[in-house]
Length: 491
Image (cartoon, rainbow, N blue to C red; front, top):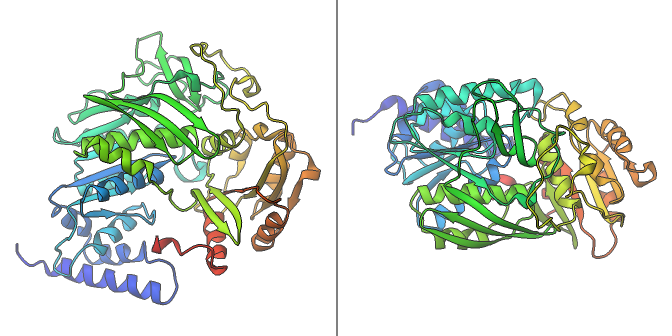
């Protein structure tokens, strides 16, 4: 291999920038090294990933990509694969480049066999173009931050253009239950396979939240849903042209949720089936595990290895992260858009007894209060700490709070402490959702708010923390200062 002077300079400068960033406590050095290296050699990422003997796997989506990617990474590591993985969550091109730099020697040799990169929705086309992936997983597509990326159709168009450039040697895994994602698989040169949830007991029974993918991608007519799990994710069909949910090759046939603790999954795949006891709660985490299983099987990992890895999985920081806060339990669940917030609230509040009959056909748009899975719990037993910021990484438009189903909290809240730069907006939203003002405390300073929430926590109770992205980083910095967690780049 010919010595590449420009690449050598890019690697050396980038790695030095990362060391300096950490020494000066300017962050974890998860982005700066990539920026520096790319200024010297714009092809740094392409050159490094081309040297990986087992290639590159990419995963993108609006919700669940960090958790799903970590599930895949843990399984590949357990399978003995030497892995490059942007574990700290820096998922733009600069962050992905930083990850590649971290695994490189000055002359560009890599210790890893395979790379696994989580990518931001908008960054996916560029990362795919530079890394020539062997596997792509597109998990879901929802309206996220209106001031960042605009509408779902814009992101979907970018994804489609990127997929059209992939060769037949690439495998593309798509979520069959998300019509915005599933439609991307039509007519590709790459090999396309689907995964999806077949257990219709988890259908919410309401079309009130269908907004991002209401109309058929092929002809423009409205979809008709026979089962709707959340947002626009479910079992759908266009009665005008016949376009319908693809039959998944990898299926979650049965899902039993066990409170805010864990779930039992029955998964089927070509040539087999397995039961997994997942140590994470919630419908969306079960679907994350399904996607991770499909990806690992496509990468040649044995099913038994996948099951063992998933059953030992620890969530990423801020994503159903359990913390011992000086003897009092915290559970941190990141919320950043209407779908994620709704599903987190649903996980915390809903009664986990499902109808045993087939889910009813979804009517045009009844209130979400009619959902059979809304909790009938009126025990007022939830202790919440909600932190809402409006910085650039959160999205400066917080109108999404009104699209999330905080009404599910009615009758379930013992007390909620609200903080962050948009605490007042959140308090107003909760009031209109039916949470009594006497059960709310607003505290401008997040550190003082944390103390107030913990001091109200009765013995044996858990404080459920729901922060936006930068609020989560601020909170973890405070938890690090108190010695309750490690910095995220040390995980």
